[in-house]
Length: 461
Image 1 (tube, rainbow, N blue to C red):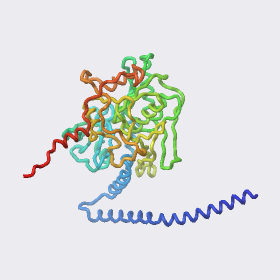
Image 2: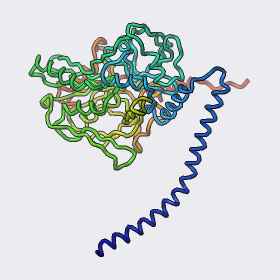
Image 3: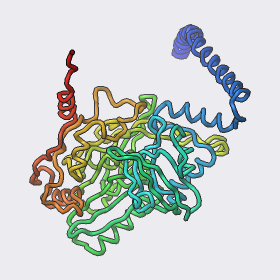
């Protein structure tokens, strides 16, 4: 009986203290809430003024949807509002079939920017590259449009021609004509290259893991004595988290693959591998580049941290956040795509902005080596002004001359990064692989100093 009384008294004291705190907190919270209400009234006043005074009649629904999207995109580059039509398109895309050009795009300062073209799609076949800016569609400017509105202009009936105006670093704007197709991207394909298998994963939709298993089984049947596997994740813009987890699980016997942590430090969700390695412990090299993003970085990070694979290529994109799609009224009013967590590799690394650094850095060409040496031409998550901050004290690697680039004797028609990945498998590790001389790329700071030296001060007369 005494125990219950003691608990009761303790509860009363705690409750009284809490009420005092909540009372003070309510007063403190009243001012910010009043400010929010005032801003909502201001929004109504602005909408009313636009309706009455704009030079032509306006579409209220269009204005309000744009306001919703603007509010969300101000948070970070990957949050946004999907109207019902775009929500349906997104669901089609994750299911693995939709109509369009085959581009993964984002918005940077009101300009549509290509993250990556998807393998085998019209955009990839037309030569669109990661980092390209799309400034117009069929001659109509898309500058200032939301990503959703710009994508609407690019999608349409299969068989129709779409003209994209492309702005690219070190080049004058140019037009590219692309014929729309029903996009059924096969996200996983495999081939044999001598004693090694190459599994190419270009994205992560609902079919990716099934396709990967089937593709590997096919090449394994052709060469049961395969000596190693190259997992090619270059130009992979990401996709579904569960597919990234299941692809990683194919190569791991157990243990953590990735964790995601939300706003509350206690809100941690961990994803673990199950027993069973699809390739029976064969050595793996993972190929990555600056177009390797999001879900693809989860796979690369998991295999690197768990010492299951070594990484060859270039530092990845650096998108370390997770987006949750939240349907509104069951999707009738579209959906919110909202950043709800950051993800962490098994060792506890957040790669937000910083990306995954390869164990052997290899540029695909001398031009690419020069690009890496010049900060102005790098395209990554860190290039977005409103990207979420990296972990305390962590920054993306500064401009530098890459460790390797194709020597003059290398056949330009071949894939140098792939060749070096095969070398790593052949020698057994990055450490044992003979290194090549560093390329002669000029670092950005050296170039800038030279330019300053060229500017002579005016001579007084």
